[in-house]
Amino acid sequence: MSKHSPHKGRILIGDDQPDLALFMARTLVEVGYEVETAADGEECLRKARATVPDLLMLDIMMPKIHGFEVLRALRADPRTCNIGVIICSGKDFKTERDESGQLGVLDFLTKPIPPLLLVERVASFFGQRDSLTMPMVPVVRLASAEIYRRQLDVRRPHFYLWGTRGSTPIFGGRFQRYGGNTSCMAVTVGDEIFIFDAGSGIRDLGLVLAAAPARTVHLFITHHHWDHIQGFPFFAPAYIPGFDITVYGAKGFGKDLESIFRGQLDRDYFPAQLEDMKSNLHFRHLADGALEIGAARITWEFAQHPGATVAYKIEVGRRKIAWVPDNEFLQGYVGPPTLAREHPLALTYQRMISFLSDVDLLIHEAQYMPEEYGTKIGWGHSSVSNACLLMKLAGVRRWIITHHDPMHDDAFLEMKLNLTRQILEEIGHPMLVSHGYDGMTEFV
Ligand SMILES: [Zn+2]
Ligand SMILES: [Zn+2]
Image (tube, rainbow, N blue to C red):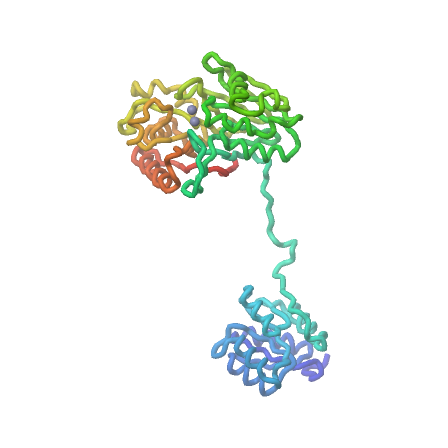
């Protein structure tokens, strides 16, 4: 190979890092180019004007005169406007690439530049010198096979909160963060879906299910106050043949579960009746003992709330998650949350405390501020302070608060969450606690 052959082309390297410039120069000289270097923008411009090289390998960030300014000056001069330019830079941003494109740069190499790539790109430039209108080809740093990708494993057990509001649905700018749909949660375990409560949130869930092939659905109702069943008439899968839907719930006082839903769909209240629901619909009263469905085990316990209201616990492997949206713990107690487990008032709640004592994640209400609770005793909901005490007495590790009061907007709920954390610290039970929101989803 003839070194320093003038026939292979003349190159000027403008780079302020001497080691790098020298390395590039050696590499190119080795394969037959005539190479000169310049250590700053000023020198680069001077040498380019003096020698008019075939190709300028230009760094962007150079002392004295910025690389783009060098380029602009060369493009403005008829003697130097046709010099081919390849940018060699550690800065690889859209802004730099766009600017380079506008200044007629032919190629953009990102440092560090492997010698083989350098030789290949320079050869490619000289090979295509006669058709200099070629568009700039972006350099891909990695082959696509090397880019790290990971798909979410949707078959892993997870919950999804479709409605986290209590009492009544609500809408408006002040409620955007936490949402306004009433109670509904879905837990997916393998091929099975378990839905807890049919508040207005179940409507959106139903639309998702209805868009997929018909399947088996298990719907567990804590109780049949409006905010836990009002979405049922709008649950699309119920109307679709092929869906197999079992509704589970406690037997009410006098009325059975099916009568409750039949009554909700009475023609005085709604245009469609239970008979119009063409899915395979069953109603099952909760019995003693656990329900085993697929890989899940479901148990229940009565909660402190008007009527026959229950709390649910779902076990998947060793993980346990409980859904208790309505529970007035320590009904009537407005004192500080310092009662011991043996206190006569707390003893009344031993069954619930035991039921919750081994859960990994508890989704439980704390609807009222301590000072609000005084006027809401017997409404079926806990004060923040009493709910905090329940967490301590049951030794719960993680708490997601749901059933937000429709009077509490986003800003208020943020403040209320901080107060909850403060109380938990003050009673010696700091724990992971967050507010549930419509759309919240996590692995179980
Ligand atoms: Zn409720
Ligand atoms: Zn209720």
